[in-house]
Image 1 (cartoon, rainbow, N blue to C red):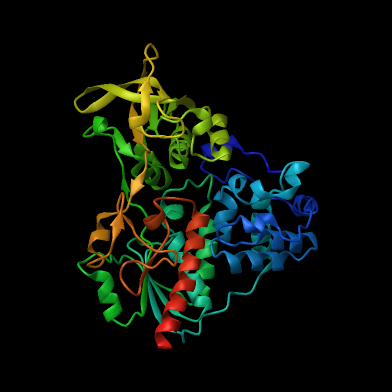
Image 2 (cartoon, helix red, strand yellow):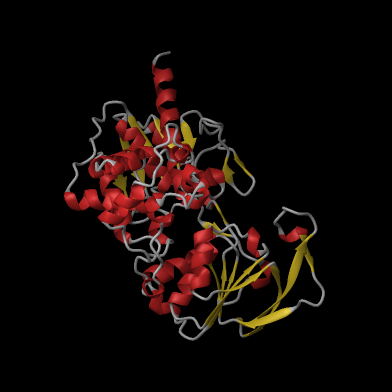
Length: 446
């Protein structure tokens, strides 16, 4: 069973859940059925192998469980806090036929914290004898790829445009969901493998990636994520309408500047980042926070746990609704107007498929409007290399081996999949590392 969320900690941007005690962890691990082909392990995109580490916990091998987690998933501590387990490993848990699934995220967090306090040896350092690889982007996919390559004794350098690594977990996920020390712990493990970081380094000049190949890097992995937020034309140009990336960054590092005490906030969107924005606004002192989404409540793309958190924090859901107009003065929005919608075609969640329902019009006061309706890759993608193919909203085109249209250049994570989970990004980074190794081995054996 999961430990309850403490709303007071959320309001103070502190870790909303206490770590499992030793007694609670033993009790939870002992509920495991020890499945031979553990379905929970099969459903982890990063291959964290919860079936194995829970077995180790059940037989009191706590450090061994932590080794299994970190060796399989370099962001194991991060994922213990934010992974949507109810859609992945816990959903597949065999004991669900009898009772609640095993609290896999809680056990993962316990194992890591126990081993950290008890002392655990550093990860094996890369011998750096297999060749030089450049990773562009220090988010989850890049970190996952770099760690996997280091295990294969590659000399890996991550080029990161910011002053710190971590990507979305570092800059946008609120600390009540992801404590800063969790990411710091995982980055420390990566550094112990001998992976190098070059911070404040933009790789976006013309032919920048191909120049890295000329500089002696044998392969490149692009994992720059998504950095440009989508916006509604209706809200363009208003001073109190911002995107979720800007808002979550401010809420995490400069929340005093938001000045939301006793204000009304409207968040447009129904995904995880919309929930994070809404709950963060409430924690910053907002009087009322509305979550306005085209999707109806049962269709929201946000995780179940996140929706429960929003309810706990008294977020007002306006699901199945569409913004149609606004009232403003001096480029500041004061009120939003909207209408409830039904779908013309079931299962197609887009504005074009929405049919307004006459007589359901509504309006709400809004001191701040946060748009959380999706993101796309930055414009730098166009300058990485001549001939690099993209598709749709600017994501990089790859094959099933994460190879781009240019030999020696690979890509993965959000810049390819258009936005998914941290655990999927880590898994894609690991799989890309295997493809890079195979590519270089075949090239050398020609």
